[in-house]
Image (cartoon, rainbow, N blue to C red; front, side, top):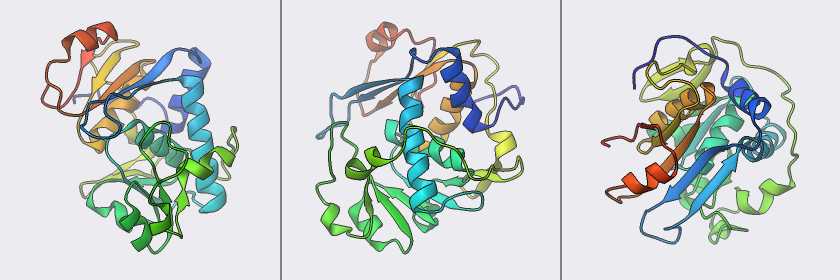
Length: 247
């Protein structure tokens, strides 16, 4: 991904601007083509609905885990629509998103693995990936973890941070490198305004590309799985930029 080197806005403000611009327009469309129980899922979130998920997750992080600037939050998740709202929630409280091998060592762990949640020494949230899950089927194997599917809905729909991150604070830690809040959101020079961007691949790159698309008042189509030719689907979705890894 090439950028024009211009920082746009802090990551928390990206969502605020999308809601102000057009709260009802689809901003995140998810397709799951991976063989398994969630195969065939299609989820579509407007800016307003995405903001609701982010507010609930941010309230959980701030109220239950005392997360804020200086806290590390590990995303031990695939590149998934749920990963995106947890990342935005982490940036809303001013904490650091950690992805990759170091994620399980973060202060707070967001994971879909009951074993990882049970073995974590701090606060842990056990995530169910299916869209309609009401509880994690293996939550009993991680009794100290928050069962996201059961408990996230109990948190507030509006969020107000107790403190804000500074531009030099670390927003994203990945692959042994840190990216500051002031440098995380960068426009992609050749995407143009309001791009509709197809994404697939590793979580770090998906997070960066999603922020770039949203900062340009655009939207994303995120795909998981090994399906080959997606030309008809992407055309039907109005995709203007195919930024999938190895596409």
